[in-house]
Amino acid sequence: MSLLTQNSELKPHGIWNFSIPAWYTRLSNGELFVTCPNAGACAKVCYARNGTYRFKNVHAAHLRNLEKVLNDTEAFRDELLKELAHKRFRPTTTPRTLPEGAQMEMLDPWLRKWINNGGKAVRIHDAGDFFAPWYALLWVEVAQAVPDVLFYAYTKEVKMFRNLDLSSAPNFRYLFSTGGLQDDLIGGARHADVFPSEEAIRAAGYLSQSASDLLAILLPTNRIGIPANNIPHFNKRMDGKRFSELPVRLRVERKP
Image (tube, rainbow, N blue to C red; front, side):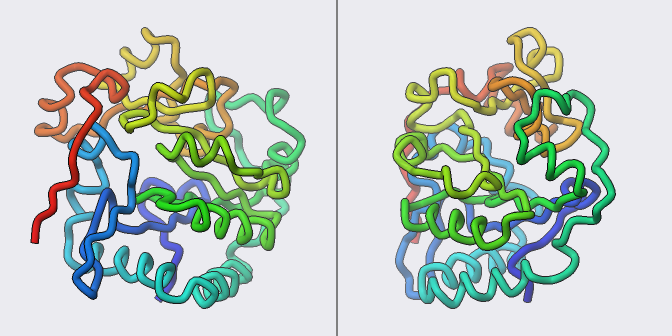
């Protein structure tokens, strides 16, 4: 079974994704494991804890990914690299069409080359986050081994990423996402905030990535806006606010 999958939103843009359970999960041995250590208000309006993510087969697949990482890290890395060696992850050599809002002249040399070569992309964590530094560095190692693929991620692990040296992997990109316990540390760094509407994104001086998730990396700004999904009970909890404006602290619900 593949470690990397594609959903209907990412597939048209040549993006694969890797997921683990969001926020926390119960491992096969009964242990409670927190996959998003710095989740805050986001946990109560998390898309990855709603809809199809709650299907038993989907959760089982995400748990299987997590346990492969935890139980035999080297085997997980080798399996992932074997999968990434497949021709479907190789550049097409036909230049990508830039999503609306991206500007070629504003991109750095690696991204310009990636666009021109028709490179593929992997979004790390359609659900979940980097739960430990060693795990983040594992993905950096994978990116180093597959230098023509763009690996990117949203993360709330602000302190962790401030202390990581990523200079050896120019194809590993990240941005912070709001709604976590370390929002106050983001400052002017590249980040994404979830807004109740496109109008709210523009009013706050952010640029929307709704045309393509790749815009999280390609937009010529550090202020990325994501329009909220139309999920009624989440909309009620957001109450017209954006993620960065919601009350921050939560406790993990330690359910049996």
